[in-house]
Length: 355
Image (tube, rainbow, N blue to C red):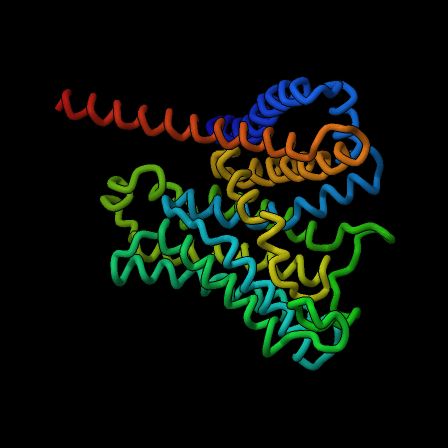
């Protein structure tokens, strides 16, 4: 029963937050002189209006789901992995270089390129875990700073040694990946590719791992009650390393999927400018780190983003209304985290007084 309630909360809470965000967006629409019903109708059409827009929304949700799942697992263990963006970038770069220079049949190179993205993203995340274990460096700070290193390193690699010099010389990007290596499209002429299936399977597997295995139980116990976990024999460093490498691997998979399924090359700034990683973190927080809820929240956030673009195309309401809605979601999450923190603090003081 507790698991059912937890799953329901993970699914209902993102929906409730989006509804609150839409209410705030309605106020912003009225302020700029727009019609709320017409504007939201265009937003709906831009996200789900026909099969083409619907698949575009799912395509945009794919990297958000994977990045969010990685962050969710780390958060479940009590570790703040804020480096999903850097892990995505290095995962995407590794997948692109593997796809370009590894000989072999297309399907084999595609699989190895995906594995390379997962491996490099996981190792980059593991570096932050090692810095915490070896030198006591705060994970929140190191993962954030490692994003900058990954971003500038990726930019350098495609601006100089691996730059495509055959066509768009002004663009910092790798050459185009051979079509035989691309992730297959799920529907002809649509942007949705097989990465979405991978993301859905990953969400189910992470849910199974965290709720049906002993290691997953230890991860959840460590995140919810570190003192009890330590008393029960859970080794913090081991769990941290495991959760960080899986977390980074999922973010690296997100980057590899975008390169092999959407962009077909590594383009400097493309993964960071789209804010996939930060949207993934938002989805995780909205769903309280529940894997299935994170996937659902990621689709809702992707719908807001694609719907906002459709709204701007067909109305006089600016794209920034979508940013207003997401800002309200951020406030919702912040208020929720603050409330939970104050509640736990009050309970600790109450327990201390009782003792």
